[in-house]
Length: 550
Image (cartoon, rainbow, N blue to C red; front, side, top):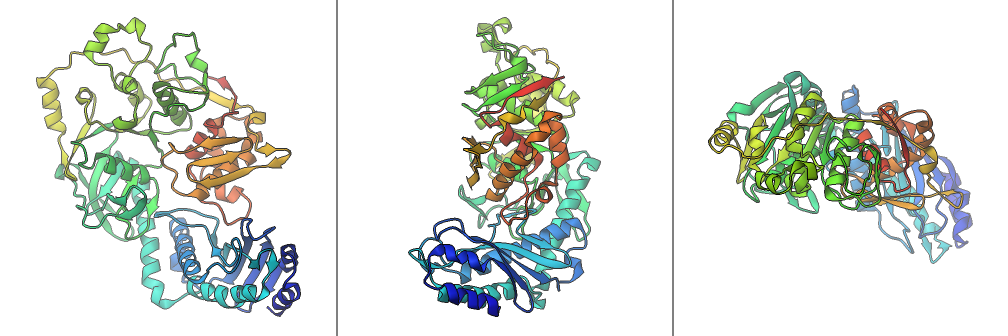
């Protein structure tokens, strides 16, 4: 501590680069501070620091992997909140700011806090300056007053917080238990009774106040005996499930909650026990996206200009070709549950009605719509949950129909089947094509993060990733929930690029699945993405080229 204070006073008033002299390890008695990388100037990204402190928390908080991830998540949240309250700007640029990776409503594995024998917190400090001159007095206040208060609040055990922490880790443990047991019950998703699904607004993740609590129809209700509680709710079975109802009655809200159910949620979120299988992927049309060497011939047999759909490439995909590519790319990396919203889908890939079939004969139409591909998808082991606001033709091919009526859920499966019999479809069933998934082997040199011999990987927000000369558009990859996931995606793509010389996308993604944080450098800026989002980012890299194998 004395050494750090002496060094700060020695460099007071000097140019900002003199802060480099404080890099090192400092003993603060009950914890150790590491100043690992000092920013180049007050406007650059803040300086990387970490604290290591003996773990004095009860072992029940981290006695298994579920609880451990949730416990680390909890500490990150408390550190973030304490730092947000205590730190403030103290000069130019980012001077005075103390921050840690910002958490969302989801409980994720992150690199910000690691709990084992010790607790290690990785965070960032904006070292104070006026202009570009060092202000040692303000830096001393950060390291000797504010930071110890944050440590006291977030990294030391406080008995008064015991119950709150325990509930946080138990909820995650029970959510993981349900997810691990969905297949055993023949389910793809589960929505607990009394869940609050609507959000405050389109830009807020917080639950909507005075929302109607979710209640399962009796016919679909199941119960899970979890390690810490019993939970009842609606089980969505394997197969094809349709979500129907009028506009603004909650269809998209339900599907969005199911899409986010691949993650655990914090207590009070309202979606704590909305649980979805880990292999669920949200699929949509994505006009203008880049596609590299994907076999979309199962859905689109040919194109008028002679483009090969077994090895399809484009820099500007249409709605139907992009959605077909999204499905094939998801199946390629092992997705077995597709989540589809009619509103964000290509109409011609969803359905061709009888009148259009009569006007445009099949020999003139290369697309086999999803409704006719369902038998092949079933044979491939794929389930679908789909919003259908205006395409009742799907009543003929679905297993379950759920109606949202002013946010009240009803099982209308039998009614839908009776309607299908009463009003028989006049459309011609098209012979389904076999689902073809070809292994693709990216050319490593086409995954290049360098600009003028320097690695350029930046994640400005959740919607885009700068990777070398290219910006990858992730705005339509809807299951990314934190910027830290985008940063992790960029750095893991750089790390694994060479592996594709001998291995396919699927092989590499299976190898990195649930290991991404462990594979990356020990920095506090990562939240773990799934392998699906890593693959989807790779597929959208506009320099990517692949070779195919059956």
